[in-house]
Length: 333
Image 1: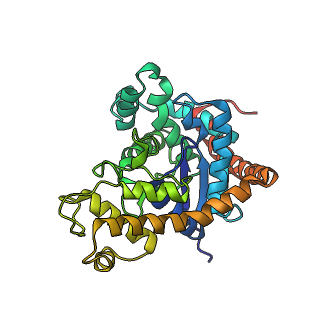
Image 2: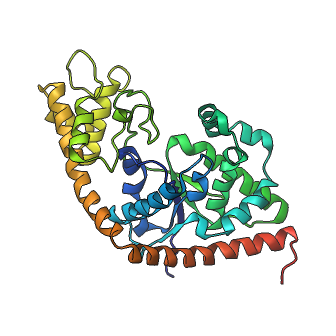
Image 3: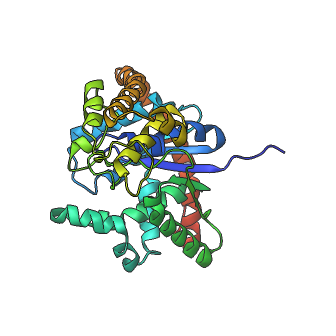
């Protein structure tokens, strides 16, 4: 009997530029995952509008992210690569799941608290409802697992709670998803504030290395990275967070262990380390940037990818919504 692959779901918003942290923690892993799972990879533009977006920029960033996915090795023939807003079932299931979700649960979500603090002029219901839409994203495709970082654990837990709540009332309908914590890819921190995660919306742009940064910008940012005063290259996140962050980045991009990386820089100074990391990262980003630019020049191809993805995603999502509507008592023709 042929082994049936497990279903995996993941999504990234087309907002701001992605950082090397996003690449290491998510997209670079997807290339391997697409061979091991039935993958649904989404561009989450519905999530993006919880914060005000410039419409023209959102459209441009959507295509740019799609091209980036493919440039990083995501094969649209091996997975379902689609745009969230092309599948109306996301909004439909979100509305149903809202009736199985409690206000107190949403108010306790860390992301709601953080975004509300940063966007005091626009604390909208979308910000609060974000985790329910995320639950709908995952449950629509009967996902077995979702690759996440530790900071996303809360969202998977609420998706599991909602699924179990619905299943207990109406009989098993949704698979209860598991979090897939990737073993490869260290947590990448801000170059200027190495005790915080590198973010695509950081206040200081010098702290984040973006996948769109040219070679000079990449090397300049690493040269300015915060370290410490003793000039000892040693991995110790507690007392040497800046140096440890640089070693982690070098380790991931060179595919060497931390101990091998420490040995390579033994007896060298911080300037040597910063330059080496910057040059290595720039070298790795160059072919991705070149391929992304080539793909962006072929809009016809990108549209075809999205059409194929929309067809396959709608087919899978429609089956789930049909079951849900039947179970909750919606009259169907």
